[in-house]
Amino acid sequence: MKERILFYGTPDFAVECLDFLIKSKLNIIGVVTSTDKKSGRGQRLNYSPVKNYALKNNIPIFQPTNLNSLEFQTCLEKSNPNLQIVVAFRMLPKSVWAFPDRGTINLHSSLLPHYRGAAPINWTLINGEKTTGVSTFIIDEKIDTGNILMQKEINISIKETFESLYHKILQEGKVILLQTIKKHMANLLHPIAQITTGKEKRAPKLTPLNTKIDWSTSLKNIECLIRGLYPIPGAWTYFENGNQKNQRMKILKADIKWFEINHPPNMMLVENHRLYIAHKEGYLECQEVQIQNKKVMDIRSLLNGYQFLEKSKVI
Image (cartoon, rainbow, N blue to C red; front, side, top):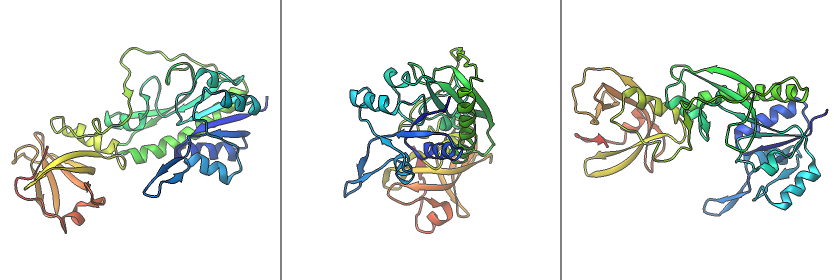
């Protein structure tokens, strides 16, 4: 059976996968992506990365505001896909994911059932995991719970950041997605139900609350949070600097220094053009930061024009 694939996705990650499938000669009959959004002072209309790619490559585009609508159901019937692929898109209703004869396949950036949710790459790093992976599965009624088709484990290096792990997962993910499609269409795969034990870790959406640094936790936990959120959205903290209270600062790169502790926890220290934050276990050396309303800067550049006064501290 020749595949007729309708592709669902929005961000750059989805674009890379879509491009790989097209260059691998798969039959992509259209893309479904988010609606256009206005932003900026001029309220300019912005297209999703997937829409931009589809426009350049003359691929039919669908942008339903309501996936349950009769209008979109009519589009599905006219397009008549026998397989749908989802990469970084919102939850589909049953009327959509159950439409194709061969079902709907999702690519997920973790080894399911671990790290179900919106931000699996970030949370594997935040939690200090040594391995992660990618999974393809058949979509069902709940989020990330469907039967597994294929999986690939990926090692996490000691200094891995979200940025570097994202690219690792993208490279492995698009390959396993292609393999999954070909084997699935040839009836060579046997979907396996996810087995849960109740100890699975979650990957919730990142928020200002769960990206804020908790200075009472371990230095290792803090360093993992910073790496897991680099370069965006960035781990952040408030700090006090003289009369300036509740200043906000992102710490984008940092390293642990197990020096003997000679300062009270949370104190900010500048020595030899370096910025340290005292901790109960040692020191966090900040290497790249962004103070609110300023650009991202390495510490040496920041200290050329910004002064941390005595008794400055994070809070």
